[in-house]
Image (cartoon, rainbow, N blue to C red; front, side):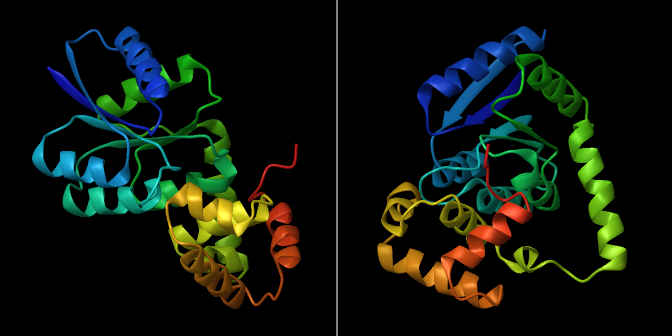
Length: 215
């Protein structure tokens, strides 16, 4: 029997993912669920899974930080990141942190089925769009220095994207279940690392580097 852990803070999303996966895999599947980064780490520490489906935006510890801990503790455990964020925002960071695949929640169910099937076969799933991004990044690394946003930690990058999307700091604090003071500290650290002084500079930069949706 295959054991799959589905991690998302919305119960309706977890249920939908279970139904899609059940249509994909012919073998018996045991499902487990988690709604937060802390919960998934507790479950992966105590149980053996064949696959983890992991959301990025969760209360408290975000998906990227959770992914790094999972891979440090269980490097052979495959993790498929399934996120509301477009591929050009978080896919590269997910792969670098050890993900076996990255798809968006806007993807067709068929893409999720293909990704799950490939990963359960011991392969990685990389969409055509991500393949182009990987090649482009490799080319850029050979010809230019590291872009400022790539110097940010995963948490700083997440906060930067939320600030650049126009969300007030108080709203970001509520969404991430952190204090207003902590988010203000992250903002100062982000601007300092990126050699900026205002949110407007960050927003302009984020738009140019596809860190936010403007459609």
